[in-house]
Length: 99
Image 1: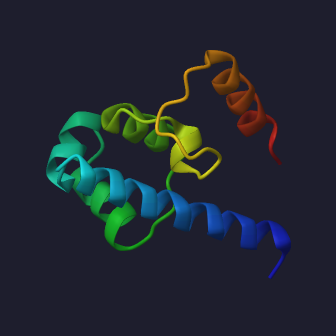
Image 2: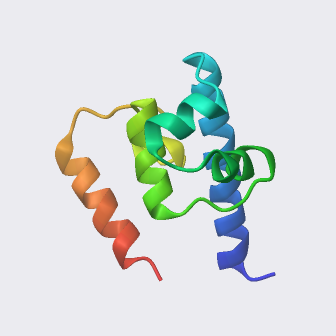
């Protein structure tokens, strides 16, 4: 397996784990998350139960619904919501330029 594939799998595992943890911490179930995000319940279940890969759009919606940063969900930072908008802007640029 290529290093990039390993890294992608590790990031997806981290996202999966953190989404589950935040949902548990905030007492949000899959149906509520689906309702808050506008993502179909089946898709949410696929992300949570089957470990399907999150799309960038779904990740943005889920982070918003859970009131955490994307950087937190992917494991880049340890605090749920960084105070610096500049950090988030740099992170989005990094995501968009990643190949």
